[in-house]
Length: 283
Length: 231
Image (cartoon, rainbow over all chains, first blue to last red):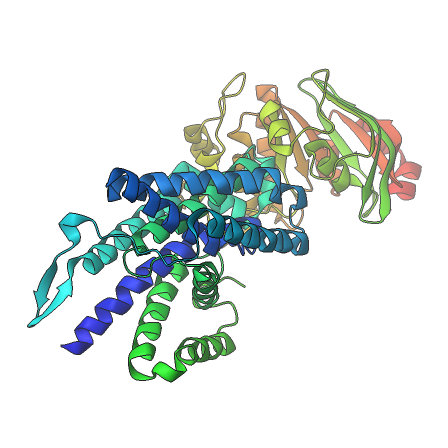
């Protein structure tokens, strides 16, 4: 039974990683930006969510308002800063690196250095019994919501007009523009959507992982591993990669606690040596 | 309709267009010919704003479009069929013909009309654009530009690499464009195709127009053909 519990733990953590990696991957696929600020979106989402829960008592409101706030932040970063260096990778990466430190210090200033753990929403705070052992309902909720968001993103990408425009922009941005598609607007939308998802991951992960100084960096590192394993620019890769890394991380910590990072990076190196573009990446 | 006035455009380090001027009038099919590397594709890219001109003006219906964003230029009513087709591998044929559809002034080119015009594509609506043959891809690239209902089509070497049957098919489409009153700026290497469909011809060498004439005049002008086209 212990296997089921650990698997569920790994899958629910994997869903959080998916929320982070999906945005990171979409942003890279369309704009070729390696967004090092992505972990900061997670952290700000978690902190802002904790403040909203403290002030209003509503977890649901926090899960909507905090990501919207961070989406606005992402839009500002893209429109007023990153846009100036379109397709110029080094200045863009350095810029996002700078924002990482600015946001980290701002968080320290606003929310202090103590770790913050969000309270679980009341209806989900209980546990259910799985094969004799009790399991927190909230983690099952995380898995469900991750699947719902994955399905929604897939539907958006494959079955809507804006999704088709997005794919056209990823395939050949120049020709997409020449067909009258406002690719710059798509950039802003995708960047904000990515920030939104990362911040949502922050709020939803808040009751489990919580927020503390340095979490931005740790989370970003894991999200990058997911994206590299899954393949840059691929939504499916973000989901499969997220689950894989979530499980590896969990089982690694259980069975080889002293080699926790090893169990993530060794499989990553092996996958990359066979598939340099990741599991679902395009050459 | 389209006036290109003395444009200079750099591509990378080299100056490709050096004071090029030409004009397309409403309903006209204008051929642009010249050897490889004289700047014909760069001319198309400059008009679309993909490689903006460093100086000079590009007027579309009297408005200066040089310096405008590419998508805004397209929405004014200019359709672009790039060299090498460049269809989107992640989009199905259907999506190519729907995503960029816009009602233009006339709104004559609809998705349904495209299916009539390109029966080959109608049979492959759910296939990826990348899985089509070269000729079908050319049709798709043309259809993709047409559903935006442009008043001016820029076609960059559309017959390149096509089988004779497909070239004839393409001729039929250019004829249909003319019938609808859509203007075409046609960059082409195949002399016979230009002679058959163009109303006027510009010849480009070293980044500028060196000669302009009617197709019939060019057909009879062995010296110009030998000097600038190598035929």
